[in-house]
Length: 339
Ligand code: NAD
Ligand code: UFG
Image (cartoon, rainbow, N blue to C red; front, side, top):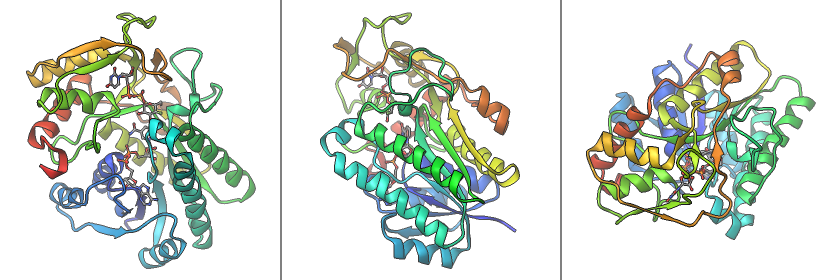
């Protein structure tokens, strides 16, 4: 029988793409989202891509009663937990909101899961838990440290999940540490749609290419990297989505606790990304090199050996595919979901 999977935050960037990967793998995903950082139009788009009627509940993960009802009504077998706030800068300004949404929300979810006897969970962690890593590639046994409230919320949740796993038999938990998710589904129907001025490189580049912004500020040209700009591990969001399916399958077959990096294992610099995007889109991306952004590290990319060994998963899509898919999404939807 097909398994029902609850995806918290499933209307967001990564959750919506994971919805498609889950359907393709034969699961029945059910989305719970309060739309605090997403647009309801995504739901229609998911139906167009999947040719299936979508199961959706509008609500908040901090609502225990609602969670209990969902678990009862839908015979949920496991949960993929994306819901959370994710902006580093905003977390410095509003730490209480971040701890409330991310930590209290996760505690509430875990308690509701326990009451409903659901013990399989995939959690969205982040490479941010490595703080300022001493070197790259970064493997899972590197020291963890938080440099801002957002990162601290992820680190605390990882610790909570480790404690729960140790204390209560029967839990199966995957912590997936994402590097830099980018790109879009190849249909061009869903993609990243940040509110206001994008914080992240890829949506900023795409908005310069489409003419919504004048130029990109490249934060720092004097890093000790091959071209002086920051280097990151940009992973296609559909590869990342498929990593969640691989994690679920690992938990169903092998059981236990798994903490793995999800990245490509390769670093790409800001200037390389600009060049790849210009090539894929045929558009000019004007840029200016400005001061470093406080808190940024020079280089951050993943050692992906463990994900391959444990789950048989590797990222397959190229930088060119990332840029082509991001551009298809941006050019078909110049103003995002509200185009
Ligand atoms: P997103 O903001 O696009 O998606 C998160 C979704 O959760 C949104 O639809 C939002 O409306 C919903 N949500 C937030 N709080 C909620 C609550 N209390 N109840 C119900 N729904 C709620 O973000 P994303 O990029 O898809 O990220 C998903 C997860 O992955 C987040 O936990 C994020 O911290 C983590 N992550 C993201 C990145 C990245 O670069 N995008 C990197 C590492 C980790
Ligand atoms: N960059 C620019 N100009 C911009 C935006 C970014 O030059 O307008 C540069 C940054 O300085 C960095 C690179 O592009 O060198 C990537 O920056 P992003 O903001 O896209 O991504 P980060 O690696 O800084 O941040 C991501 C997630 C965070 C997470 C962090 C650490 O967005 O949530 O990885 O894992 F905390």
